[in-house]
Image (tube, rainbow, N blue to C red; front, side, top):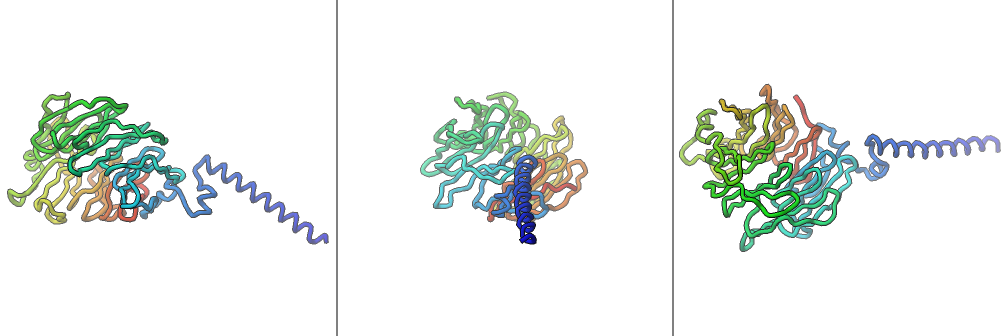
Length: 365
């Protein structure tokens, strides 16, 4: 009898200790970001843990994911309609991995942006005639607000602290609207080409096959910073023949008083050619001076991101690449060539492919 009683007591003590440790773990986990008990039991870990790896990690097995955005706390993405379910705007907590449907879309998605309060996106259709809608929702969820609807396109959605910007292809105009809503304002009109719209550090840039232009005031003729002909000459880029196509794309970022821009050259226009076509990532001095190529990505460029001094890119032919802008040192990163939608934050790289949303620890040289 006496030999069994201590065993029972010790068993009871062990149970009490286990419960106490479990409680400490749960409390500490909520403070410092440890996996929760639910995570451990289900085998699910949130992105804050799984992304700290040099190997790609699948964190959201949804497909097809067509747009990604990120802030300090969460990831956001749009899942395109798959024939059964409508397209959705999704949110995932970086710390817990918990997902939330912020909105169900009524038409195809054409952009996704996030600021400190709201998530913005565009829905549209090309059936019979272009019909596009600009919407927003609070990042915590709630009712969807329709900011603007029109017959015509709302493409290349951009933003700054106060406004949303987009390009209307039919009329060749750039418009902006306050984030709180209201009537759009025409910024520039009657462009002869279909420009690439970028908004960087409060400046509005137009790329295209003519050159890179800066919009300084609404409805004022944009100032040309450099033409595509000048870029070809300054960068000593060889063209195969008169059928070669070239144009300035996105302004990625401003860094050390230089603009980081994309200059696409296609010696085999309209084809996915890894030998004839390339995207040149170029540094252009804002005060004037000679531009130079930071990195050349063979074939199509499908995603870029900058956390100074590192620039990250995904190419459709060679996959992930990175370059130190200051030193020019380049290396590969562990992202396949079938990836797209690259998003970069301070700690991680995020992208999507046929399997879903993936991430890795942000590599440094």
